[in-house]
Image (cartoon, rainbow, N blue to C red; front, side, top):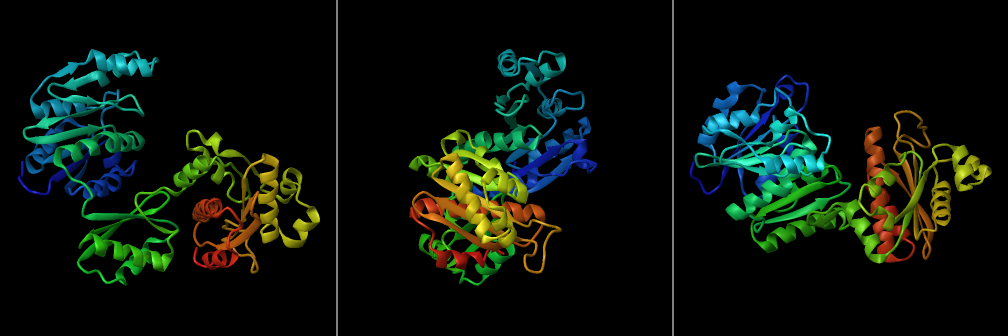
Amino acid sequence: MVVSDKKKVSLLFIGTELTNGTVQDTHTRYITPRLGEIGMDVRSVQLLPDDRSITGDLKREADLSDIVIVAGGLGPTSDDLTREIIAEAVGCRLLFDQRLWESITERFEYLSGAANRNQAFVPEGFEAIPNRRGTAPGLTGSIGDTLVFVLPGPPEEMQGMFDEEVLPLLRRKYGFYKADMLEASCFLVCESGLEEACRSIPADGLTWGTRVQRRRISLYIRGGNKESRFSFLHSLQNHFGEERIRQGDIDLPAYVFNLFREKKKKMACAESFTGGLFGKTITDFPGSSEVFSGGVITYTVETKEKYLGINRDQLDDFGAVSRVTAVEMASSVRKISAADFGISFTGIAGPGGGTEKTPVGTVWIGISSVEGGAVAFPFSIRGSRDRIRSKAVMIGFLLLEMSIKESKSLDSKRMWQYSRIFL
């Protein structure tokens, strides 16, 4: 094992489906930046087939690194060989863990076959790591002086186990924290635009890195001192706005969900081109009935008239994608649902359907509240159909946050300024 202040990590991802290109490796992009956040360097990443011959690769990486993280090959089928490979590398037996098997079958009563029993075998000297999302427990132990973690291959299971079990253990064992780093969450900002803005700010010994996540870009500002890191962050906030650049690890929909729950307020949605994406996002959170009254998808002019009661002449005069329609949709769904806030989405996601007057990417989002009346704002969003829809939903969460905090109609001048920068 190498001896160094900064711990070296080897990543081994096992699965013939990875080496033959059937499945894309998503583990590297997920694990590597998280290890970097706690001061660890990934020295190598290998994709290996389901084959006992890879035992030598595992032993070699254990000789070269302080920590080895393996993912894949823990399933119940005959080609899931990782347990055997670990035991061979250590030179130990595989032992059946009756208590582990009982804990698996308690959660998954339908598992009773010999194949599934294989998942309760543990290399001697190793411990099982609980899997809250699947049947295959992980493993942790040592090969010589090198710490080894073995995680399941499915991304959801691997990510959950890594975040909930592996990272906390590494922090406790090695004492790495983010003391010299400032983290920020960046919303509705493209990576190239963020990079350009960062380059324009005097660095003063600082470095920065980004990680693109599902609903935001995480920015890590390192080096310097506390004052210089915060000065860098404040410069970005002055450039983009404090709503879009925030200190900390923040998920905007989760933040808005908790804000509504704390204030005991409810929202309702009327969606057109987003097709229920806003409703899905908010109901992904457990306990969403506390803040979400319901929603409707009115994709056509006819359904907007039938279910939301919008006047057909008005729809014909102003169009389905307009300020008037967005306002009416938000107001109607709020009243129908007896909610405190109503939000609406109408727009053109493409790739077809746009006109010279209303091109693809044109979006109107309406907000209605009991105290503040109803307003709607236009946005022009570039990109694919999926990007236009997902960005619109994120803008909607931002508008709801601003609305519930201000407890009155949104400042029109301020929002018209924002409507020009979400491109």
